[in-house]
Amino acid sequence: MRQDRPYSNIPGTYVLDPQHSMQGYELNMFCMSLNKPQNRDKFRLDEEAYLDDFPLTKEQRKAVLSRDWLGLLQLGGNIYYTFKLAIFDRRNMQYVGGAMSGVSEQEFTDMMIAGGRPVEGNLYTSEEK
Image (cartoon, helix red, strand yellow):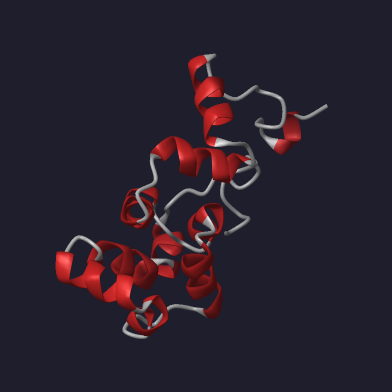
C-alpha cells in the first residue's frame, strides 16, 4: 500500500485507488472468474492448477490458497471481488469480517449489532494518544 496518501495513516484502511487496483488486477480477475459455474468446477477440482491461468504474485497465490482474507485486500483485492471466493467456500460476510478482525464470526456479528468496532486503534495514527 502506498504511504503517501491522506488515508495511508488510518490503520486497516485499504483504499482501492488506481495504484492498488493495478496491483490487484489479476487477483480480482481470478475472483471474477468464479462467477461462471464451469470455472468454479475447475477451481474446485484443482485450485493450484486453476490459479496457473492467472499471473498472480506468489503472495497473492498464497493468500488465495490459504484464504487469507485480509491479505487479499492488502495485495490489491477488492472486497466485492474477493468475496466471490468466500461465497465459493460458502462463507458469509460476518465470517470474513471476523477473520479479518481476529475474532470469531459470532464475536464479529455481536460487535456489529452493538454498534461496530471501538474507535480506539482506528483513528489516524497522528490522532492516537
